[in-house]
Length: 369
Image (cartoon, rainbow, N blue to C red; front, side, top):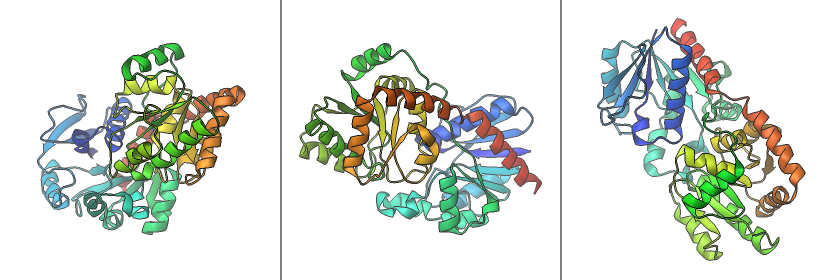
């Protein structure tokens, strides 16, 4: 079986779906030395994702998210003789010449269209046709599966849930060493709440900022907020709230950081706060739990599914509820230890090797169908 994996997005972004591609390919290489895998990379990308006897790179001219991509890509793929094409970035070529599998990470573009750029809305607007013509759909959570069935009318038998997993680098390390690294790298000293994600409206950063302000003013907690993530669509709203509440000096925007840097942030923080309005999966809470860090997450979409009984759930619209949840973790050592123990156990339920095995079975199912 010859499987093509569309890995062009790795060149443009190694966050989000880019990470999904890299970890899935690595997992497949560890469990499968029989089938042939063709890694479809951008011609602009000088790197090779993986060098294995049954994995080979093919450079494609068609850029990711181009308005004619779905038609141009099909022409390029015809010469490769693929049995199955996996499109991790939702949208496959228009009626591909081989069997097709797509991964649906979330349906934020349907449920919250005002959170997207016009260009992203245009691209992901092809989702109706994509789910109609693809042979099978991978959903990264039961929540995403339910959304796909409800909003796109896809029969349940055409969707399989395959959970993502945390990068294996995320693990507990010495807390004092982690604090020292954070102090040296980012100038942050003392207790802090951590937020990890792109700063964009869907992530609900203004609510988190107001909760931190309330924690300081009403509960007299000397705690800072560290935000690790790049600037996304409409990020200015978050900076406006910092200025409005006079939080300068209490809030640290450290930008997108390396996995090693993030490892120390997870191990030095008091908690992770992730009050997003919607997530198809939500990797930061899982990464936090793998490091033994208590997570606070929204009680919506896939987040309760990911954290299980190891996290505190809050209404993403309720500043008071989020404030109280943070106060509890800061002041209840027994609760912190309980959440740490449960979080480490919950994180062990997810692995990229398991994801790779389940994905490989879907390739096989589609090929033999």
